[in-house]
Figure (cartoon, rainbow, N blue to C red):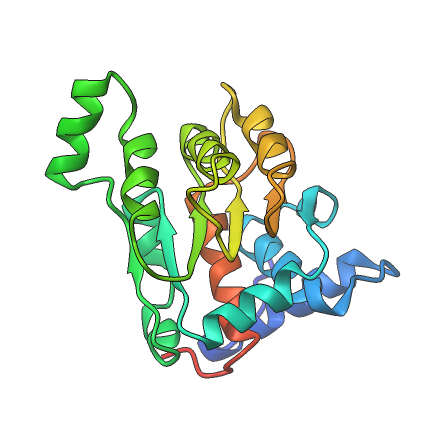
Length: 213
């Protein structure tokens, strides 16, 4: 069998990918505020289910972008998620990306408490005196702790991106965040991942600034 390869210049691959995504979505109309985020999730995963599973609280995208404009920082639950976020683009607005999962004090406290590092990381993040966006792509325990902190009045995030992947308490933790009374972008169901969390952050950033270096 002869395999026909498409001739595409390296700098044109992303644009060509988005052309294919748009074509395969067919006549489906996406909300303009959400379109870039949905398409980037599809681009990252090659999974068109994100067109249906991504849920947005009213005004979440614009509120998040306004928070970024004012210097909001992003907290992730994995180093992978942190590495995937365009930190230069965020820094143009004064923001930083944090991940406390590898911190020695987090590991020690989690062991002492018999809890997860993700849970303790959320406690550490809540102590930051900054506007925060949480990008959770791996640990449902992080989302559960965020829900508790929000319910206790100890934290009011600008946005929670809830896209952990897996089987145990993943679906339930996402549903909790959607009931927490804060802006959210959630991938309902089992699918997600640190790459999806990072790509949502980047889609928010690229909607503000077309430069990506």
